[in-house]
Image (cartoon, rainbow, N blue to C red):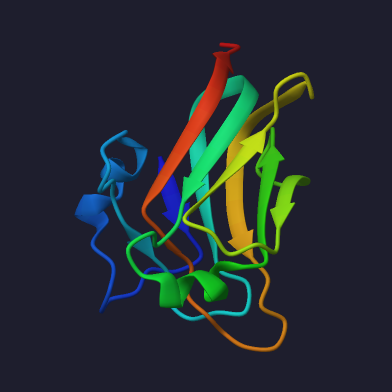
Length: 135
């Protein structure tokens, strides 16, 4: 399941959300409204031991990559208390969070941006979560 802080009526299509998790080159699409702290949350079927997360940005539009950082990945077992497991200030086509050996168990994964000074939209093409189920 995927949810977000908001969804852009102009640029988002919920029918493309499930394709975010495909390994196809074009992937899916999710686009929030412009916000100071937009986020996308993945709710896994149950607790899982995470070994990595790959986040695919707007690879086809270089001009939008600068607005995708700073980017953080947080995890939670209950959806209330969050722990930051990855951060980057580097605009790129994709980001890889290597979580192997870090003993990170979670049911919730939140990808967020923190634009302290200006509202911007979070735009993602794909999300790949790696690990082992614990349920």
